[in-house]
Every structure is written in C-alpha cells, then in structure tokens.
Image (cartoon, rainbow, N blue to C red; front, side):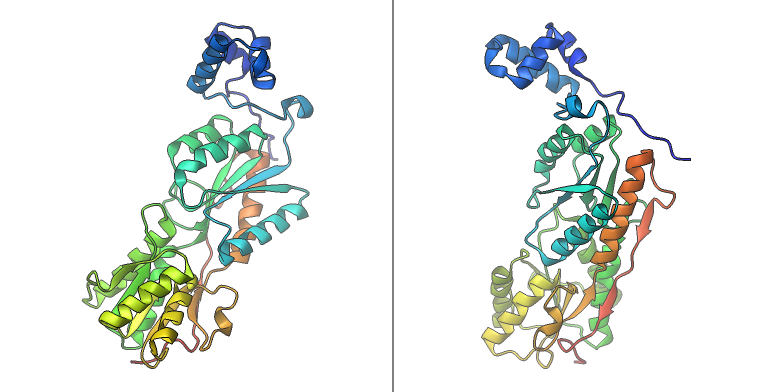
Amino acid sequence: MKTIRSRKGAPGLVEVAARAGVSPATVSRYFNNPDIVKPDTKTRIAEAAVSLGYIRDRMAGALHNRFSGTIGLIVPTIDNAIFAELIEVFGGRLREHDRTMLIASHGYDLNLEVAIVRSLLERRIDGVVLIGFDHDEIPLDMLAQRYVPVISAWNYRADSSLPCVGTDNREAGAIVTQHLFDLGHRDIAFVFPETESNDRARDRLSGAMAVARKYGVEPDSDRLRIAPYDIGAAKAVGQKILSERPPTAVVCGNDIIAQGIVYACQASGVRIADDLSIVGIGDFSGSAHMEPGLTTLRLPAERIGQQAADTILEMSLSGLPPAKMRTNIKASLIQRGSTKYV
C-alpha cells in the first residue's frame, strides 16, 4: 500500500517572520502587496527568506495543502526535434493520468535551473524531470527540502544518484564509432558540441574515443572538432575539415550536426559514402529521407518519455524512488546509405 507524502519540513511564513523580527501578516503583505511595506522591513524579510531557503507557495490558499496535479519538465532546448518528441510523449502520458505538464528550457545554461526550479516550486509542482546528470546542487537541495521527487531522463548510468530513465550515451558513442571501424575506416573525424555543460555529448564523445583508442587511434585537433547543435555552424565546420585534410568518415554528436556535414559535402562536391561516410546519433525526423539516408543511432524518445512519466507519477504519490531506480532503454543502429566500406 502506497503512502501519501507531505510537504512538512520546509520553512514557511512563520519562520521567515521570526527570522526578520516581524509578524507573519507583514511577511504575507510583503509577498502579496510589497508597496505597502516599509523599505527596511522589505530588506529584512528578503534576507530572511533567502537565508532560510523559503519558497513562496502561490497555490497554498486555494489548495489547502493538496497537490497541484502538475509535473515539471526542464529541457536544455525545445529547438531540437528529439526533445520535441520527448515533450510530446511525456505530456501525452501525463494526460492519460489526468495530470498536466509545465515545461521550461534553460538553453544549455545550467545556472538558470535554480530560478526555474524555484518558479516551479512556487506553483506547488508534484515532481520534476530533469535532462541528464549535470545539475547544480542548489536546485536539487531545494527539491529535496520539500520532498518533491525528481528524476533524470535521457541518460542512463548504473551508478546514478538520481532515479534515471534513458540511454547509455557512452554506449551510443561507442556503437556508431565501432560501425565505422567495422567498415574499415581509420581516418575518422569527430564533430561534437561543447561538453562542459552537456553530459549527453560528453558521454557520447567518451564512448567514441574509447573505441578509437582500442584501434590505436588518438584523434588530433584536426580530427576532433567542436560544433553546436546548429546546421549552419556544423556545415561551416564540415567545409573547413574537407578543405584542409579530408578524413574518410565523420562521427557526429547528433543528427543536426550530421545534416550540417551533409550540406558541407554537397557544397564541396564530396560524394557522401563514396568519399566520406557520415554517421549521426538520434534518428531525427527526416534523417531517413535525406539522400542518401543517414546512418544513425535511433534514440527511443517515445519509450523514454513514457517511462519517465510513469516513474515520476509513481514517485509523486509515494515520494519514494521506484523499485527499479535506474532504467536503461537501449538504442539501435539504423544503417542507411551514408556509410559504406572504405
């Protein structure tokens, strides 16, 4: 039998009032009608709220300590086909259980997650789904203080401290790279985004490098290039690679970068597969319809979205991690015409 969790333990108006040396009514006026509160009093209340980690509960009066029926989903970007598919599936699964979704994007700037989580908590969120494992401790602590469940989606690690539902991105990078080595390629370029704040890209690159080193290949700066998830920028990087010292194959951090490399080949008169094999990660909408079709790793966005929704819904009722805390959803290599034997 599941237990229903509570939100006891988080600091409230009374604690803020005691810390600031004012009445709870004054604290309430500060949040609801700050213009009538004296400036020095506002300063004391604001400092007390920050020092206590107080989160304003915008819905407390209406809900009387009930939950909102809303789950938060924080993604790096919505300008990416694969995340759009995840969002669609996740939201649909929540609707099946009469729940709603609040979605936010930080644009790969993890510093923004603190403000986003604070805003979600103010709306009495029932649970939060984050993407990947790179997160500041502050928003995680804010969620833990209030017993709000949180899971990581899109990436999987056997040693994850958070419940996670996703694909092993190290394995993903290894699979696509192994495919090229199996085809006889040894002069391979790797085009990936910055990895400092993107653990998915970092893990994929790590997996790719592990396979390369297994074959005694250590890519130099010419063979290890940085490109954002942007077709135009990736095309420019591809043209530079092709004009300087063309490799026989390219591993791309995802299908967006791969599409940019395809355009670079077309602009440079390079025959895809015959002169340059290209492999991506993601199997985005349209990748199968390129000419030739893109060889890529299909990430199971639909299954990840459904499983993530089911997991966070279960936790929102019990407040406890699921029995299977870490779920590895396997990706699959889709071989098309953009790769061939060297």
